[in-house]
Amino acid sequence: MRVTTLELFFDLVFVFTITQVTHLVTDAHGVTDLVRTFLVLAVTWWMYDGYAWLTNNVGTEGTVPRLLLLLGMAGFLVMAIATPHVAERDGLAFGLAYLAVVLVHAGLFLHAPNSSARSITFRFVRSFELNRGAAPLNPHRTKSMTIRSNRGTPPHNWSRFDF
Image 1 (cartoon, rainbow, N blue to C red):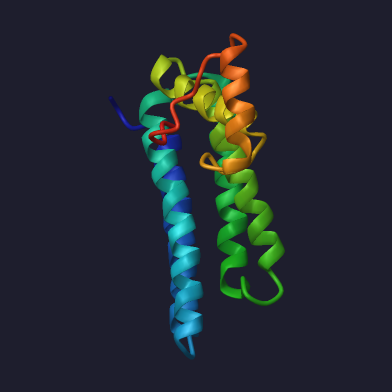
Image 2 (tube, rainbow, N blue to C red):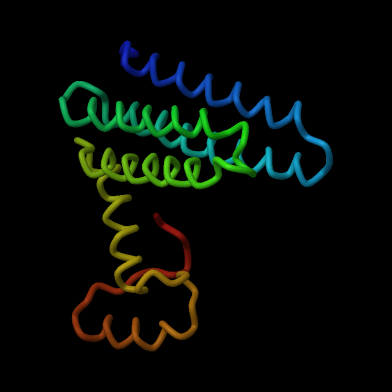
């Protein structure tokens, strides 16, 4: 599969985001600042990795995937601009931009042409719905889930995380 110009531009925005993380490293004055830097790097890299995998599976041929990828880039750009002062005045901007990046990523999953990417989204939404947003191994939801599975709702396999 050939890499498109849009995907290369997305990579460039991500590289800019990583260069902004280096400001946190150079301005670190202690272990707390380095841990904060690691957390920012971890969530940023995690979402970029998700986008890289997804764009390989979804592609950017259609209008909707292109627009969603552009929205994701805008979110990464706001994250990059907010990164140097994420612990001070720009924490909210970083958090809202990250939320936008995650939601756009979910939207890309919903527009996936192959069933593997769409099934991941369905399984996550279904487990969230069955568990009402609580952790998968919440003991207070076990009884409710057992009753639902006996009423014809497809049982969910909680022995592994499959989303």
